[in-house]
Amino acid sequence: MLDPDYRGKHLQLEFTIEDRGGFTTPWSATITYLPSLVAWEEEICTENIREYYNNGDAGVPLAEKPDF
Image (cartoon, rainbow, N blue to C red):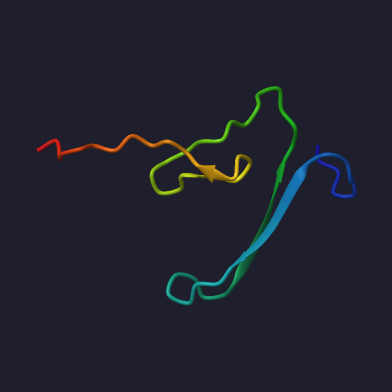
């Protein structure tokens, strides 16, 4: 069971969705990420190649010519 008053080491996100085209009223939710035994690894994709921890861009393969 999660204690909402616990202020230890976890990440808690609270967000509100406002989409008049999809919902009749705004709604809010909270999600809590607890520490786990598995480390979260950073993933690089061609849409976000910035390595902020390294202050540079990741080396992403670039095709010299199209495949088709």
